[in-house]
Image (cartoon, rainbow, N blue to C red; front, side, top):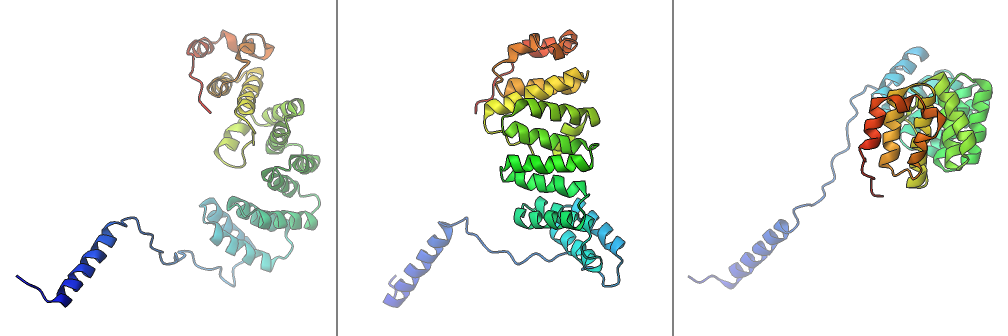
Length: 267
């Protein structure tokens, strides 16, 4: 059966187009813009209501919507240090560090006694690996409020990242004395210690294990001791000499852990 020349050309073109579609199965298609499900802030809403709604949205990780509500509250109560701090935290959660820093600095200018803003500015500096500057902000926060475990934990992380281990341990110990669960919370959310090498990470784990052991918190100490082993801590034999582990060494779980020969994770 014969086909006119024009039909043959059409068949070839159609076949080529079909092959082109088959050979590119992972094409990217731009989705339409997401429609926000949250109603915009009501013009007659009170500052307290707007702030409460913003807090709920931030807790639900609906950060852009939360910012809308915080800014609506701020428009009704300009230069409020607490609102500015919350705006900074929300931007920080979205890794908008430049905007977050401006909000924290604005918050400090509005209330020089507001410790949280100093601490959070320190977090921004820490994220930028400006550890010395971060330490200064954490110390300013502590000078305003010395009962916050988070401030001391952040201070310890900054010192640890500078490899200044003695002040790091002192800060961590103070944090644990205020709140023994401070590391549990910081491991689930917030900024983590920026440790430049696997060796430093392992040393951090061992240091925290030692602090927990000193406080008699066996479960937490064993957890971090296991992490130190997994991260390849080179001086693990010190666990049999360090006085902080005297009581822990009597624990059968300690003996079991040491005998487990936990494989070292390759880095």
